[in-house]
Image (cartoon, rainbow, N blue to C red; front, side, top):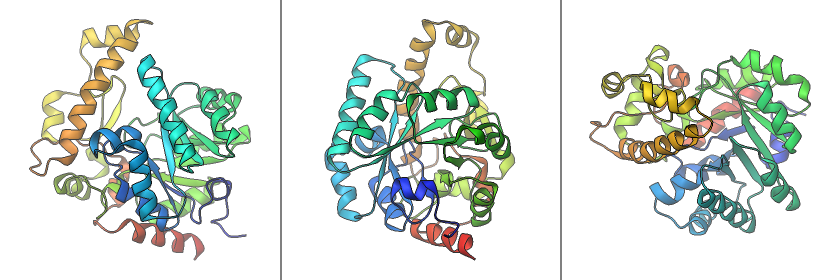
Length: 326
């Protein structure tokens, strides 16, 4: 048995317990395929695949399949913001199962219905969590593992450190994947030695030759230090980790008083979150792909401190693998 033989590698059918996390808008087919082909697992983000990169969902999965025969995964963001969105997510999951996907990562909401569908096809479901109460709900719903999102993550970061999450969730009897702050091989090895079953990376895989994010976005990741990552409420209504660019400083980090009031209400919070989601989908797409760098609205985690070059995704997977085995 080697350090690479973990519940994650067995569940996902992969060689290296390394996940390229689903990223809107950065999860293009070539990046997903490159990580999987190198021995990790790339995760499809359905809205990025369809809305950003212009593929019909099934066709996009088949494109990835044409680039690698290795396992790929899918992210299901399952908070029911609308009946139409829920129907679309059910359709995407069913198509993914038909196309042979057997590893799913759920975010928000109750994953029970996803577990029922995926388990019936022999697949596995891991669930994003930031604290114990969400982990317990995920376990009750039947998930097979947990993505423990810590405070160093990009996107919707959690409030706790990797060490705190491991201590808090370790007795639940589910494999834990460390998500947040890992940008180099020593960080990956440290997570495995702590007791994590693997690691999920996002920011590190944006700074790759396969990712279709703009050169300006990638360079900003290379230039940023850990202190340049701030939390903004102005994107989705809850704190999101972004690079502290001039645009972010002009916009401010806190939601306005009306938005904060609506986000506290049982009914109005769903309307406000829907408004934020629709606005951010357009803004993040435009900013991530704009080569001019004028729209400097970029998500990233504190792993920027360990990222110093743009390189092929396969090189990252191989370097992490070799470090774990040395």
